[in-house]
Length: 71
Image 1 (tube, rainbow, N blue to C red):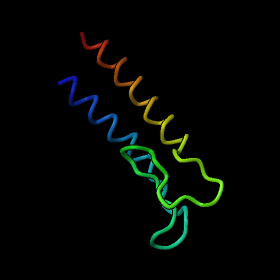
Image 2 (cartoon, rainbow, N blue to C red; image 1 turned 30 degrees about the vertical axis):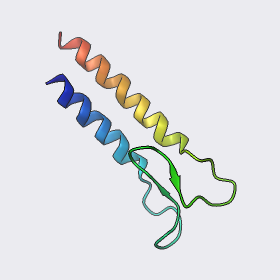
Image 3 (cartoon, rainbow, N blue to C red; image 1 turned 90 degrees about the vertical axis):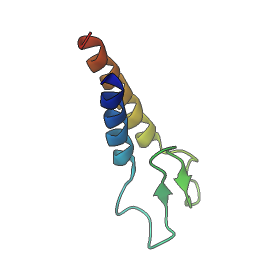
Image 4 (cartoon, rainbow, N blue to C red; image 1 turned 135 degrees about the vertical axis):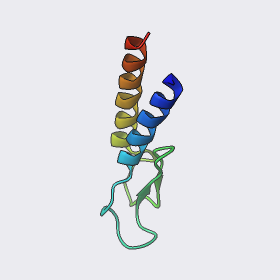
């Protein structure tokens, strides 16, 4: 049960990593929701999206707290 809660929380965080409306048309900037890697970066972009990584960390912390409360 804990694994399902953790999986759901991580999935939500990674879904938040995809930023619709950013970048140009097809083939534009895209953040991979599983790795937080920036695909087709613009000049000067970092290789990984910091907001995506922070969201995943917050979700993992929240899932760990929720799992510890259920014990």
